[in-house]
Image 1 (spheres, one colour):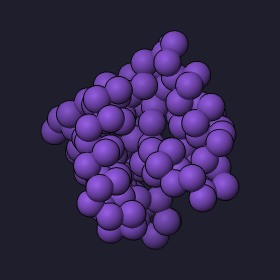
Image 2: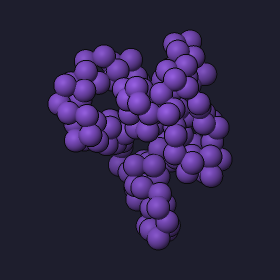
Image 3: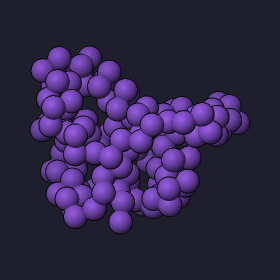
Image 4: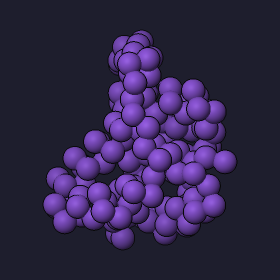
Length: 130
């Protein structure tokens, strides 16, 4: 089985003060027996937020220790186009282009569960951990 990993899950993993930290650590531990998958846009978003919010050392630690444990898929033209079309169709909603890309990726790959704190994943029909 495969678990999708969203930036919200990765950021809660590194932030011990995040109320979801313990649950995310547990979800990542569960992920040791499963493939932990994400896509390149999540990595870009995560590193930008981590560096701004927590500083360069945390971003470097993510690059050195967390990202290598993930199966990071490139965002090809087809996936990008599908995500942009979905984003355009719902541009008034609060769902980001990165999340629209995640939903399209998860559907394409048949992934049903995500380590994500974002309620939009549940609204889109996915199971979330923690």
